[in-house]
Length: 396
Image: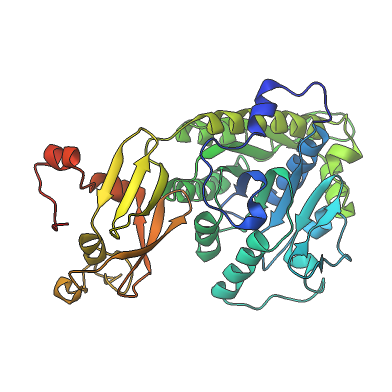
């Protein structure tokens, strides 16, 4: 680490989570992956991501940014690389380096003025390639600049990327807060921890007199953080230098480091590292240390609190929650359990984000996602069965 004044929290944050989850090989040396989202467009989420990344790098961290907005990428312009094109080394795409950070974006893969006219499955596939086939190298933080919304792309990222946590960006007014709540709840539903909330455009600072004017109201970000029981990471004022630096591809933390916005970004970076360190020190009891198949083709789970779960494959197969087994409109189960072979076995277990696993069975079925909450509640070990007053649903 280049900065001798690195705090204990910063050093701890860069060590990465205590429980390492399965991840693509390209992410093997990435200690923390953090999604920066907002739910709503136009709140300055990409500007926040860029300046947070550059501030973290200035504090001594190794940082990269993945621009996940396939349809409207912003990072090439914000980082002064609009005319640059990413190249490959035969196996991987090599990220662009600017201002002390690495980044990849659809904007450096396709021509600058070429629209991406793709359906969601193609966009999701492109994002997976960015995660798994970019030469990210050794990083303390990979920040994912999320697109607005809570649809296919956001859900797929939560499933495919082993996220350390998420940052939610909002502006103070009620309309932005309402949409930011939806983005926050999406992260909660897929069990992505909330690092904290950032309030952007938190007052306009007049260039003539230096007076702050709360043109978008104030304290909305603090209210949202308080509602979520999360950290308020900081408030970023609206300054002309932020806008001019963004247009010039020259982040304000480098363009005018003594300005109010730059000071706020460095404070944000320090608060961010402190919260990442806190999250990494936690060992959630509702997440497993490992989940795998046994020699007998059953599911075995070891939880962080020491509990060990056992699940026989036949009942797991018969309660598969996928759309082929359950009618999505009515919730009625359409799979006939009598059609599931009694000797069905588990053929594979794949982690899905931080909230569940995908199970593959010996009969060829592999589209169900089983949440950790449900698996813990239906544990078939002797103690859990006794507590529920139940018996094992299928003999071993």
